Amino acid sequence: MLVAIIATDKPGHLQTRLDNRDAHLAYGQSSGKLVMAGPFLNDGGEMCGSLLILEVDTMQDAYDFADNDPYAKAGLFEKVRIEQWKKVIG
Figure 1: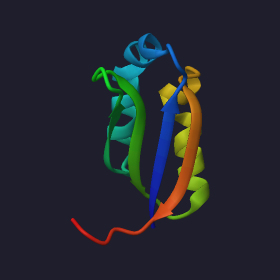
Figure 2 (figure 1 turned 30 degrees about the vertical axis):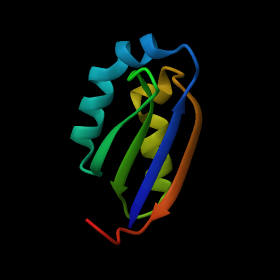
Figure 3 (figure 1 turned 180 degrees about the horizontal axis):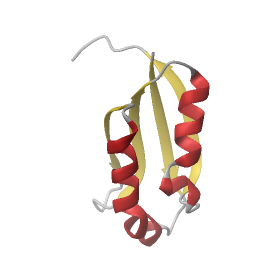
């Protein structure tokens, strides 16, 4: 199943994102679950959140992935939504 992880950064935590970016990217690339991903940008063009699309067997796999993301472990996110997602176009 496909799952979307939609995360919003805590205000003022851009440096936390930058400090953990390499570990976050390596984690996603090595997981075997990541289909596509990228940051949300604020009006100033700075990263302020994340959208990740995973292919997983269970929702628990998605929750585990999200919990073990280096960004999550660093306390970057103010809010995280995890939803099943159906690709229709693209």
